[in-house]
Image (cartoon, rainbow, N blue to C red; front, side, top):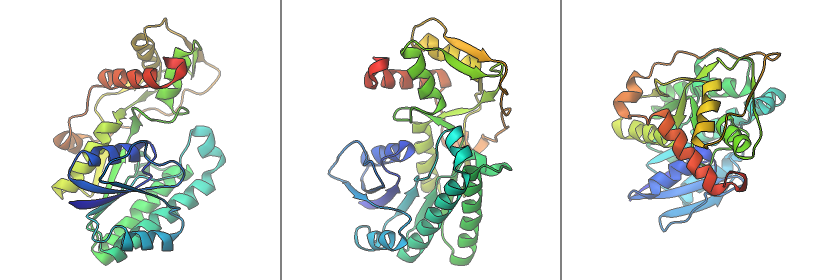
Amino acid sequence: MKTVVVTGAGGFIGSHVVETLLSTDTRVIALYRTDPPPFTAPNLQTFPLDLLDENELRALLRYAAPNAHSVIHTAAMDGNAAFKRDNTALIFDTNLRIGSNVLNAARDAGVENVVLVSSAEASVESDNGYALSKSVVELLAEQYRKQYGMRILLPRPSNVYGPRDKLDRVIPAMINRIASGQDVEIWGDGSQTRSFVHVHDVVAAILQMIAHHTDDVLTVATRETISILELARTLCALLDVPERVRLDLTKPTGAPARALDTTRMYELVTPRPLRQGLGETVSWYRSTLPLAA
């Protein structure tokens, strides 16, 4: 039974990585800072750990996960647009330091595969502390590859959605407002488009990267795009309620969509259609949130 260490194991992407690995012949070491994964299993061990403490991380890899096959690093300081705007230095510093600590600890433990979950934002110029931290950690990973011969994989998800996402993110926030009888407020005319990828497809892509030994960097996205206005209308339809959308034309519409090369993604994983994924997500939130019941 191989051992895989997952950081951020109680978070959105991390919890789905853990859940998927538990269905395979894998021993999972789940690291979390505040909230553990929301399930248990005989092949799961959980450890509260602050990734800013490099010595604690080194000790865990040495004693709890010797000869680990992979470390999948999903932990990151993130948040909604307002949080990113107000905490840009803190986010940059935190994500850079925990990324460095994971690389150093994995190198010294001789871990075969290190997966640093990055972001599609890392591929564009930005003064956003979150995007900058992902970009710089990618640069650091490249230097570790060169000097230490490490196998480091960098999946770059676009806009991820699905069960267990935070309520302050766009899709669950819309679901919550619509289900509780409130209007969805959209800045500008709602014409800005985005590419959303289901969290299960993100996990599948990560595991395919590890299995195939071919991709150092992978854009994890779909070819399907949707405007923010059409997204709100689709969610209203899936929740079977009249449209509750209000446009604020005094606010900026926002950045246009970026063109993403998804050729390799579709060779490894066939992402589910957006409407199907949104339907699954709505069903999960309706069964979980009191306002969406």
